[in-house]
Length: 419
Ligand code: AMP
Ligand code: GLY
Image (cartoon, rainbow, N blue to C red):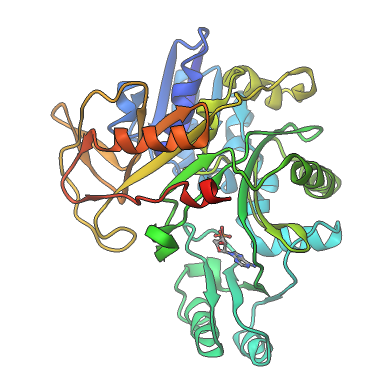
């Protein structure tokens, strides 16, 4: 089979590596892929948001199956457009991707179907929003409605910060159109858990749970990033919690989407907070998480392509999707300065790292060398029988990749080990 994978980050590298384990896979095109991915797939210089060019490429090359991984093309309808020209796809329709594309949509969905989430109000008028936060308890959480590269959430510690965030989003256009409407919600506390799931709209199969580390620096300090590292499984996500999430969150969500005429097929990501009042949804993503995928897929024992095809064909109930009992850790190596300004173009070299491995993200190929080209450059991943073993191996292997101006957090998984 010939497979098309849309996207070009560490998540896509992990997906491609897993797909290649299936003997039926003869060729993978990555659009656009990256310099590190080019060892495993044919990278084609078409951007993930260029839906017209993606469709033209598919018409010409006739892939047997396509995986649309990032949020933007999903929200822009890449799956609908590819299916229209006869390409079978893994991923939700644009209508279903709205669950991530609009926070107002997802909050209203949760309210309507009684799915536990933070109390909230939505606003498209700055004056009204400013008036609302005036006598609210702090901290308070302000979220841009639309996609904002994972930066559209501001936790305001006091009224001044709240006002500043609202003005920045709603009148200064910090996130473009994404921020012209906002959700203002109650600040929740508790451990965070990411649960990625396969769903064909009828059944939902959670994957192994994971924990992201979003802040740039050790001790959860510094700016929010796209994710500096992950571990799986997440020790806070006990069997009891999993059962409660299935009953109160996962099944109600896929049923709600179906009721709304937006049947969700693909990977539905539940960003959860385990609050003193039970698990609540912090966010939905309409796709695999990055860098969660980098620890979840290596623990998957079942075949990814077969599972994805079963999702597409609404036959997921016929599949057994298994994960190993072990653990995994991903340490993201970033360019110094990320998530703000950073330099790139530095050569990346790898020494032998045993059974640990690298998924590339911000990397480009240049005359046979792999150079840094982004903020999050790569993730070093290791598996182990338990979390401690996986973390130790990932850090040991982290000493075996080199590029100038690199930095990585030294405490990925520390909180999980203490749990
Ligand atoms: P998001 O971009 O929606 O994943 O939000 C980024 C981060 O903000 C989350 O991972 C949480 O740590 C935090 N966050 C979002 N909503 C809330 C909330 N209602 N209460 C506390 N923290 C939140
Ligand atoms: N790691 C969080 C996300 O993919 O949105």
